[in-house]
Amino acid sequence: MKKFKRMLLVILLAAGCATMFSKTTVNVSAAKAVKIKTKYKYTKNGKYYLLISGYTKKNKKVWTRKSDRHIAAQVSQIAYKKRKNQVYLFDGKKLKIYRLSSGKKLKQIKLKIAAGHSFAFDSKDNLYLTGYFYNTVYKLDKKGRTKWRTNIKRLGFSNAYGTKYKKGVLTVYYEINPMNSGLDTEKNFYVKFNAKNGKILKYRG
Image (cartoon, rainbow, N blue to C red; front, side, top):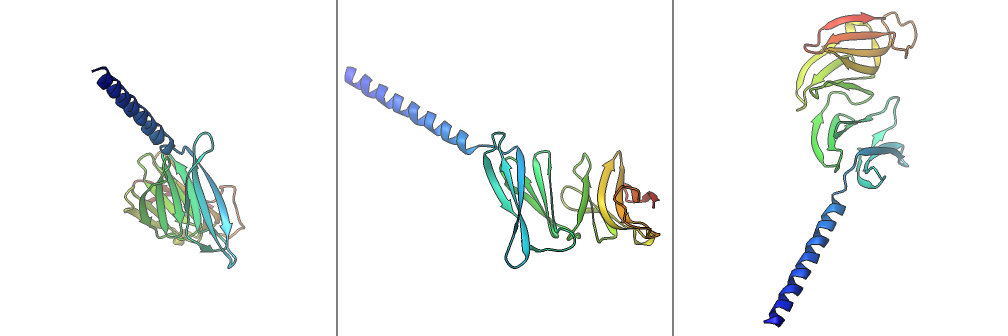
């Protein structure tokens, strides 16, 4: 009887150790990224791409993702933003969305803008997007569906370099005004849109 109790005790202790080891292994593998670091790489044939990595608070790398390779041009075909618990990678005409903590790709959305991405978000995760060489401004919902598009070519503004959303109004800043009075990057030339329907509210330049 005593021998049986000893054997049972040994088995229970072994099981307990195995459980502890298992839990420790899970905890190590479940390290979560809370911030990102980026680095551009260049190839011998003149192309470039972006490496974007997620890190823990203690600077331990958890994941790395790579953009497509692009030909170097006047404006970049790559842009990115860490927002809430997600990472948005604008990669040419593709928007890739990753979970910040693990790097898992959540979705990929086709875009009409290929380069010079200028964008903003609202509290409902709607995306407002245009580009440096583009006359059209888009509003996309979080599923990638186009809610509205507005073309500003008739106004004469060009070279969008900044986009801001605030209290239902979207503002896009441009380098060139209708009078073509020189490049401006001090936010003096802009067009304001009703963020709900895309109607032009006001412009200055």
